[in-house]
Length: 78
Ligand code: SF4
Image (cartoon, rainbow, N blue to C red):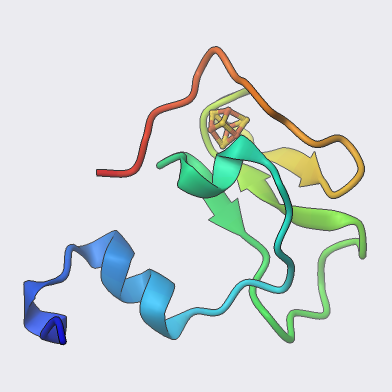
């Protein structure tokens, strides 16, 4: 088993912060994606998260119904 101290910051957060939804978006493996967390009441129900890259400095809402399979700004999580 991997010790928590050996994890990178985004890997550690992925262990303790559970996302609300699971979809086929490529965004899940992109370092610019910020998911809606489980139990969050604030965002609209169809959102799976936000993109921090497209339309920077604003966040772009990633909808559950527009599944992104490829993206020009995609950068894989390390
Ligand atoms: S850069 Fe593209 S792949 Fe990455 S989170 Fe934004 S929309 Fe998704």
